[in-house]
Image (tube, helix red, strand yellow):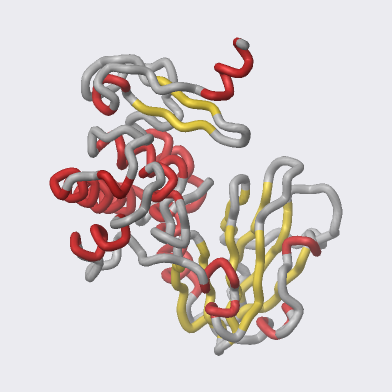
Length: 286
């Protein structure tokens, strides 16, 4: 799933390539991907792109006051073309969800692999009309988001810090992968309760969050969309590296499996050398 750094890179890429160009055509291949009906998709055609913004994990193209907003979900992606294929877009079982072409012939496809289709497209007059944007928490990379702001968000939350970091209504843009990386950088257990963190731990977590995301954004920025997934994988210290050696201490990276996701951590760096309980595997053993 693309998260804040990759989505920021996509927004910057589109800002550079699309602003100032008119949208020549928009074609839907997956009707279910479109979550709005007014304005119609055709309202985008002929409009010039004035700007591109990111809201959490949402990309927002402003075309003359009509906004094309999309969320790539778990298996979605953006494929850029310098010359959009001339083949007709046909609804069906292909990965293609939407194809957009600009007046210079360039453009992009929104695609989604797999059978569980969660990619979402919205055409709205105000991004705040998108429910997922309306409920977003603060952007953890915003220049004005201070340590005090961070501490205030965590205060009183008697939930595991891993879940707090991933909650889009708490922090906009952090997902499973970067929450793993942030907690590893902070040398903190994913099961630690947010409300019980000491002031020193809160500051450590804040610094780890800001630095991890800033480094990832810097790594991703300037890359074409086709390179972003591999760049993300290469930059991971523990996420997706179960069974490999931790690059900090050399211990074996372990994972915990949930019903629909997993997370990775280093026991030596984060949990005092103790493996965390894996409830799914424990049930299987029983």
